[in-house]
Amino acid sequence: MAGFHTHIAVSTAVGVGYAMWGGAQYDLPLSTCLLAGGLCSVAGIMPDLDSDSGIPARETISLAAALVPMLLFQRFQAHGMSVEHMVLAGAPIYLVIRFGLGSILKSVSVHRGMFHSIPAAIIAGLIGYLICDEGVSLVRYYKAFAVTLGYMTHLMLDEIWSLDFGAGVPRVKKSFGTALKLFGDDPGATLTTYCLLGLLTLFASNDKGTQSTPLPFAKRTPVRAPVVSRPPTAVRPTSRRVPYDANQPIQQFPDEVRRDAAQFDDSPRGVSRWDEEQRDANRPIAVPRSGSPRTRTAQQPELPDDDWQPPKAARRTRLDDDWR
Image (tube, rainbow, N blue to C red; front, side, top):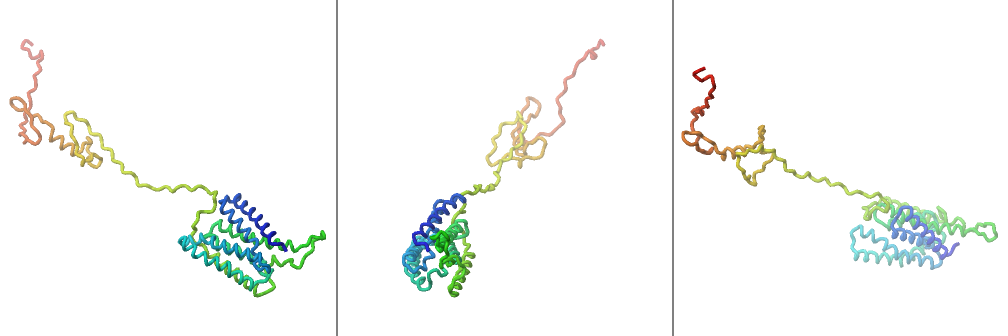
C-alpha cells in the first residue's frame, strides 16, 4: 500500500496537470484552475479517512474543516448573506468537521472498506459539486471532477501497490481488488453507501439555482450591445415657398404662428389665409376720382362702382385727314 507522502505527491502532480489542462482547453481563470488543482491534491488523501493510523485521517479532516467553510462563501453570498453571517455560519461548520466528523468516521468505518470504492469517489465528487458554486456552470463541473479525479488517483495507487514486482514477475497481493471495487464485504456498509450516493445525486440534480457568476468560458464570442429603438425625432415640416410680391410690405410673424404645411391651403398660389388677410388689410388701393387720385385702405368703406373707365387715347391716322 502506498504511503501518505506518495498519495499526496502523486495527487498534487495530477492536480497541477489538471489545472494546466483546464487553462489550456477552456481558458479558465488562473484562480479557478489553481483551486481545482488544490481540490484534486486534497482529495488524494480522502480515502484514508478510515485509516487505523492517525496521521492521514487527522490531516484530511483538518484540511476539510478549513476548506469547506471557505468554499461555501459563494453559496452564502448567493443567498444574500453578509460577511458577518458568513463568519457565524462557517465557525460551527469548522467545529463540527474538525472535532465531530473524525470520531464518527472512526467508530463506523474499517480500513479498506467502502471508503476505498468507486461509489465513494463519486460521492466525493457530488459533495464537491454541492459545496463549490451556486447554479449550473462549467466551473462547477470542473471543480467537482477535480475531487473525483484526486480520489480515484488514490484508489489506483493502492491497486498498483498491491502488485509486487520484486522478483521481476508481478505478484498479486491479498490487498489486490480492495480499492477499485463496487461492493464491500459488509452488506450494511454497501447499502448505506449506495443510499448516500442516491440521495446526493438527487440533491445535485435539483440544485439548479440562479447563477451568481458570469459564464465560465473566458473565450466567448463578444456580445454586442442590444440596439435600443429610439422614437423618431420630430422634424419640423418645411413650409411652402410663398411667391414674392414687391408691393407687399415685410411682415413680422408672431412666435405662436407656425408657417408649416398644416396652415396652408390647397390653392395653386400656395399662400396661407393668414398671409392673404394681412396683405389685403395693409395693401394700398388706388381709387381714381375727380381731381388728384387719393389712396384708401381695405378697412375704409368701398365706393360704389359706376363702371367709370378712363378715356382711351384716339389714334390719328392719315385716313382721317379731309383731303383724303
